[in-house]
Image (cartoon, rainbow, N blue to C red; front, side, top):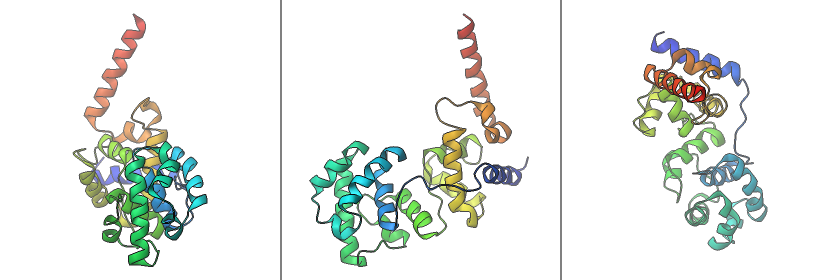
Length: 226
């Protein structure tokens, strides 16, 4: 297969597997999405979706959020981890949204990235999912799969994002990044990965990855037989 054929195979397989794709983080508007994505750093979507209703019950917009102290926010979000940094970020960005943007989340990458505790990935997710502006946020699943599929060299997430944007059509970015995340979780996880269930990697996977998987499988089988 040529690189173009591999890319098309990925697009077709993902479209067949996930014709409709749910957005992993519960939210009702750009602000609640921004807060949910910020909270998801080094946490799980499941945990974030358990905590955000408790936070949003108290404050689901910047005007209400700034009435809470950083300590109050921290107490609510503690279960998701990194609460000291995240609580300061949530309070700080809410103040800035009120001061600079009339309480609205700006649909602008640079403006989003300038907010406290908002990195490139968080800003990209908000651009894609809140505003429908083509972005390709790269999380650990996408980074891992782009390497396994030999579509990126795995050097860093910045390189993976560049490669994804170069290889995939822009009009598909917003859907594809979610499809790849769900595929990574269900069929190509970092742990407990079973190649026989992972049709994409089995078909177009990087040779060194497939070889390492095979060798690891053989070792396990030998240990089992002893």
